[in-house]
Image 1: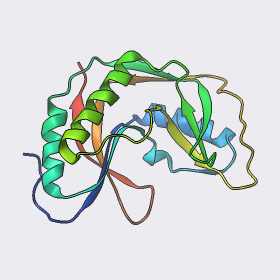
Image 2 (image 1 turned 90 degrees about the vertical axis):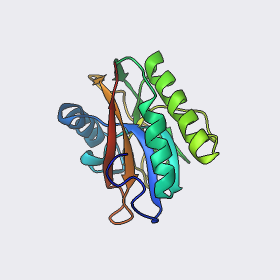
Image 3 (image 1 turned 30 degrees about the horizontal axis):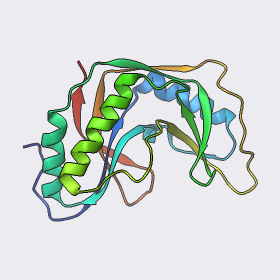
Length: 178
């Protein structure tokens, strides 16, 4: 059992994600500077693999145990196209060709979430890193990055969203890829 697992009855808002290192964060921040809108904080950049939602600590334990059984090979993800998500109010950087290990990892972790919570993803998985939140007057177009962001992915994490301030995340657990 990991620290904090089962130690509280407070609900936590959780998700599985890829968590970039400093170098990738710096390249993502440079791309965000080229985008319209209000940039998200660089230390919050991540690529969600499976959204969990608000759950009790005992569900977190089940999620961590399930994630420990997920294995996948390390891979490189090339973020090379801009995407507008949600109602068009999110500017994101995405891979034009998601690597198969990324898609398999997301699918396996979504199964872990389904077993732990009974939730099935409501939307088709679309890998991306949110760069900015757009206002009504911000343009919904940006050139592709001059230099694609190459991200060597070696692990994945379980994160908690903090309520205050929004957009701040805590990494709770980490698992290596093979």
